[in-house]
Image 1 (tube, rainbow, N blue to C red):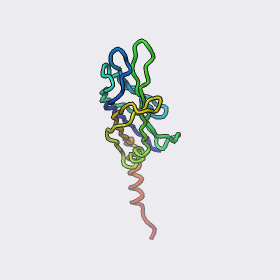
Image 2 (image 1 turned 120 degrees about the horizontal axis):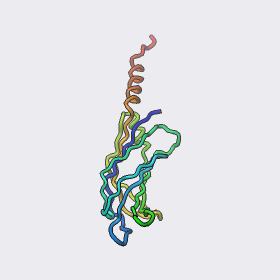
Image 3 (image 1 turned 180 degrees about the vertical axis):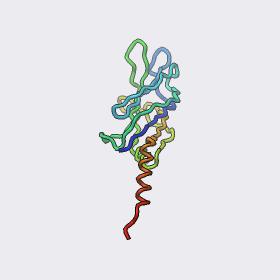
Length: 157
């Protein structure tokens, strides 16, 4: 089993309808990977076009116990006098990224746009996110050492 760091770069979001009657939405993102959860900063006063440019990290084991390898991004509107409002969510599947990262030491999904859907599963905008997986150095060293020993071992005559 390999382990490493999954880094999520929250860039921005666009086209998110403004649900606040007074003032602009104050949006943040809750990012979840398996049982781990991270929260972005609140983009105060930016309405439906927030910019975060923020990195969140997760510890990853691959292959792990549970079979689902996905990031869940929930976009929330911070409210002062009531419960925060759910705006929408996006899902990023990272199994191929993790597989490539384990084989090559690291792998990256460059920032791109993902559809944000509301609770009714209708399109409500997009979020731009990049994801990088980096294998722990000890894992990389051991896997290279194992490969080297396979090629350097004597072959029978």
